[in-house]
Each structure stands twice: as structure tokens, then as C-alpha cells.
Length: 427
Image (cartoon, rainbow, N blue to C red):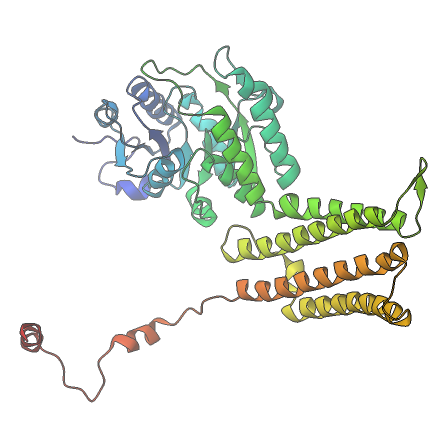
């Protein structure tokens, strides 16, 4: 079937003239795919936009593909299941300089495409749609479940603004526009519903210029089946993604809180301060030490996670971590271990002075517990420093000339002919 294109002068190369690619993921959307394509093409025609519609089909068994093709859309078969997997392959096959993505369930009004394109032409890397009133959007009655509208979306969007300092009011909105150049830089990896959230988070981490366009969310137009989104499963996946991309909130801040608790515990237990008649003694010291050990482990995990994320391209490098060398970590670890061992030795000396007899445990434990804690923290630090060194080892990229040399025949050897090769295979 011949595919239509819009606003392309005759005799010109279509792929070179396409400015906008509208990409829709599709899984059995025969009820609504047609109206979505018609709205997208109509919007581009009326605005004088040269564009295409790409349908990323995720294994539809209904008439979705044939409907899309009959309306001039280009279909791309995606074998890997998942919202993100379909979008990634659809976007990779797009030919436009700008990409507008949106669901094919007729909940998003593709007649609003020109507003996104205008912002992209102004130079923004990412233009996010906003359905929530906070960002000027509008949700029609019956368009969004109660939990999503009043709890899920506002809460997750608030977390994005707090954890990543991203000025987005509706992180879950599936209608957005972005430049193809920016998308290629992000290296997105999530195959599921969290794909859209990963795009927002990484755009913020890498300093994208972002804008919002208020849109109206309409009720789902599908009749044959309900939404593909699963409230609690996909909500947890989004929260998990937040934690993965924020070692600061996942490890560092909880670690600092535990270390603060340890300091308070030590400050109260060492001098045996009484609170409401209760004497805070060795038991408080033990609990405080546990908090300190757990807190320091969290800080080390935050450091290692941040180094790994930067190496894998998940997050940009952090300049402060570049000054933390393996040698500095080992030095700090050895000094801390030495201090802890000195405390333990001091108790052993006291024990020796009483001929290894009975000790004043409430007093000696005030040295033993911190000593053991310092030894453990020093050991953790030294081992983490060595692990950081492992994570910072990059595989050397060999020049193409060296790779060619590995497979080139020796200069003194005779060239191998086809006849020689045939003879060797028959032996």
C-alpha cells in the first residue's frame, strides 16, 4: 500500500524534508488508532508541518496495523513487549528532527501537536505535556482514575521536583515532544511504563532545556479492552526508578541520618547522661554504634553507586567524586582502623594491669565499643576505596588500525586463495 506524506514538495527527498515524527505505541488499538492518526495528520496539515506518523506495533492481533497503513502511517513491528520497548524502536525509526510521542487510545488530543512543535522550534530539548491543573492542564470527567489524579501523579511529580529539581508538574504525561538529537544522547533503557519517567529524570540530570504545554486529557476511547497501565505495579516501577537514579536520596541522606543518630547516642552514652531518670549507658552505645556502621555503609554505597552510574552513562560524572582517589580512601581507612585498634589495645593494657582479672565493664566498654566500630568503619572504607578503583577502570578503546592489524595476514606469508581455503576445509 502506498504511504502518504504531508506537505512535501514533489520531487524532493522525503526523509530529508520531514520535520516532525509522531510516534504512537500500539497494542490492539483498533478502536482508536484511526482517529489518533487522523488528528495528527490534520494538525500537521493545518499548521503547515512536514511530518510523518509512525506506529510502533507491539504485536497487535486485531486490525490496528491495517488501519494505520490505510491512513498513510508507517508501521514498525516491535517484538519485545513493553511500552518503553515499543517507543524506543518507533523513535529510532523516526525520520523527523522533532519527535512527538503519545498514546494511541485517543486520551491525548493530537490536534495540539503544533503547540509542542512551536516550543521545540524555540530551542527547547524537551517539551512536556501537562494534564494537571497545577500546570494549566485539564482532566475531563472519567479521563483519569481517582488514585492517579489525586495521589499517584501529584505525589510522583512532587518527588521528581524534590529529588531531581526538575520543573515538571506532570511526570507521567505520555504526550511530549523532544528533539531527536537530544533523545539519542539520553541512551534510555527502560522497556516498561517507566520509560517516560526515565526520559524526564535523565533530561534533568543532563541539563536539558525543558518547557511545558498544558493539554486536556480525554476519557480513554477504547471499547475492546481497558488501559494497559497497572496502578500499583507501574507506580512501584516508577518509584524504583527514582531510587536507582538518585543515590543521594537512596543511600546518602539515610546514611547521614543514621550517622547523626550515632553521634547523638555517643554524646549521651559516653558521659552517662540521664534522661527522665533513665541512665544511657553501654547498651545505648551499642545501638549508636550499629546506627553509625549502617550509616557509613550507606554513604559508601552512595559513592560506589554514583561512580558506577557515571561510568555506565546513566548519570553525568560528579566533580566532587573525582578528587576521592583510591589512595585517599585507603589512607582514611587505615587511620580509622589504627585509632580503633589503639582503643582496644588500651583496654588490653588495663586488663594486663589487673593480671587479666575482672574489669570494670561499664568503663572499659566505653573504649571497646567505639574501638570495634572504628575498626569496622576503617575496613569498610578501605575495601570501598578499592572497589571504587575497580569501577573506575575503563576498557581501553583500541584504534581501528590496531584491530585491523590483528586480523591481517603476516607480511611474509603468501596470500590465501579461494582454492587454498577449499582445500583446507576438505582435509
